[in-house]
Length: 364
Image 1 (cartoon, rainbow, N blue to C red):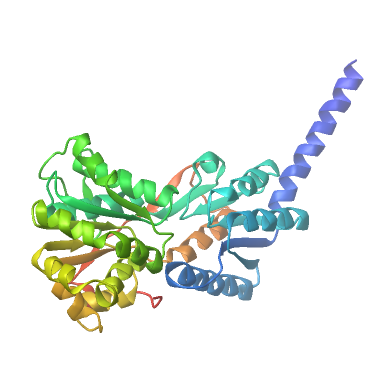
Image 2: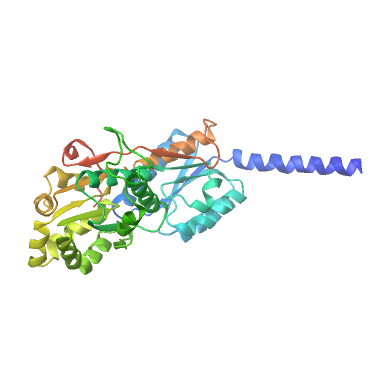
């Protein structure tokens, strides 16, 4: 019996050593992300490829960027990575929640992964690190800015979501938490700010249960919704307080609103819109939108005519290179994070006062 037990323990130790060796001996850093097409994702993909090229050129590790257009495609890519047997770590920007199965497979095979940007809550605890810009603070910053510009309970509001994932849900959570007085907005450059009026949840719900739409991070998606609803929205704001607040969660979608004002709105509605107080947000870092705010873009006059003010919370896609560097740090053993923990980059507001001084990315 003792002999059988000793053999069993020896076999367990061998299997354990093999498992550790399989994950530690890998020399390839795999990076999964978007197919570069347009906007934020295109620039994130370009930054990722450049970082992978840099790591490979250094010679210690091979870094491979694998683009995809869906989470399901990423699952297939992960199955190939597992079959290759050479992964040191996988850095993954999940494109949608269907990528969950891929992250579960990595965890089952004891291949460490770092989640970037879109965090899938079901697998969040499995990640070596969950890293992104601070989406809660993006939402808090927009709530602060809209409130500073006069937004009060009962005002007419529009919410333009990118999708139904954690990026936008956390941006909504931060917005709500700020207005409820639960968190402050911490601007990287200008310090902390707290709500000047604590809102009731029912008043907050009125914002998110009203004129809301998922735009799939697309200017065209925002354009299509505004095309359908703008006459109604403007009429509602005119009959209400004469103010309209647009919570757009992405630069591209803010451009969609601008594009409609330029090409699609009726003269009568435009006249009513010009008479309103309209404030619109964005999130990203697109240079073209910074140029609009700075007064140097062809749409600058249009924006100044219809928007009393506009802003964008800086959320630079270059963070993807930082995510990949975390992967390098992990395989080098330079690691202080516990599995499942998060790291979130601070944000700051860009508006007409500083747009000319902030460098964005070309992407529209």
